[in-house]
Amino acid sequence: MDMTLFTEPQPQNKKLKPWMVALIIIGATLLIGVVGSLIGGKMDDTYIQPPMSPADWVFPVVWTINYIAIGFAAFLTFQSNQVAARRRNDLIWYGLHLFFNLLWPLFFFRLNLLAFSIFWLVLNIVSAIIVACRFYKSNLAAGIIIIVYIMWLFYAFYLNCGVAVLNI
Image (cartoon, rainbow, N blue to C red; front, top):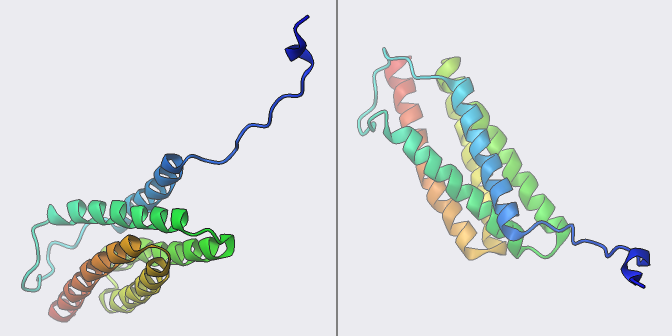
């Protein structure tokens, strides 16, 4: 007689595979970038651009690479952290940073709040620095990725200040 019909079902491992976690974190980060660009719209064509402004096609390419990179950094940190509370707090800081990142295009492009956008971008940079420090403690590569991203944020800060000064 087959006893498998009468045995208790074996508990299944409900833990997500690392590649699934990576897809979720990177995908969510990219989604926030897409939403930010949709609510931001395009820059006013009448604005005078500061020196060293890149071609329009550069921004979507670089921002996509940045979002994938910082999402990957968040995944590395998540995987490296064995302490649940630390992992949760790192992701909360990362989420806060993405919140600042999400709203900046709205303030700058859609609402044309050029001076306020500078302030908001400073909050974005400060939150990115905090995230970099937290990530660095968990995973060296994640910290370095965020630092490279922060360099782009400083360039965005220069461009934001330049547009504000030249057009206010």
